[in-house]
Image 1 (cartoon, one colour):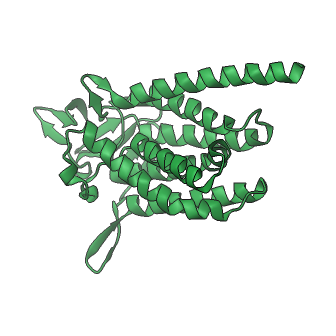
Image 2: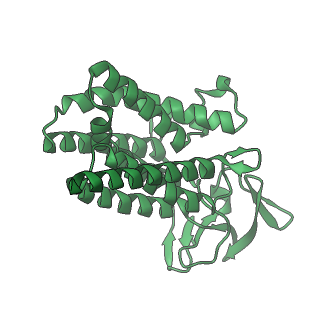
Length: 288
């Protein structure tokens, strides 16, 4: 039947290797390639936006190196903190373990410092650069597809996704059920092979991110105040990530609560409050 099947859509993928190629005996994963392409695409978008708004594009290319480094460090530390990992394991990235919220936090903190040093308005910088995050996130979710990770619980909905069990790292068939990240899944047999059938939550988030990116790119020309694109990014991403995270079984937890759901709710609530306040302030100013 193939390694990857969308049974209710009639889509079959016979083979999808996590490894793109080998270089001097070293395996190069599609995930890493896609993350690199996402970073490049984000830089190009930021440069384009800088030119469109009359800013110096070099401001954003100069920041890119520090932003990417701090983003990766933040993503790794965030994962280790909430995954009972040791900081000693920091460099074992090839074994997995990057959390997008940590990457966003690391990137934002580096941007705050960078704009302070360069004496650039942070809100203007953020409005120009924040949509680039969506580009990286979209490519990163394709990486999750190749890696067979970041999916949700069992579903038989239209978009249900089946991975052949022997291709999913960490999934085990035990006593007639599949155990993955301490969650229990029923076994789906396609032909004689066992599969794990799941919500493709990475695909849901990819579509949400793409729709949000398109909306923000259109809205940029109509924004009411400097910093609004950053605020709307936080609201949109927080809202989408909250409901998508509720479908997953591999969340990072604090006590018994998924960390990403807490962060998403906080981001959405804070951003919505700021947006309503600023729009009211804008309306009052316009009417005076």
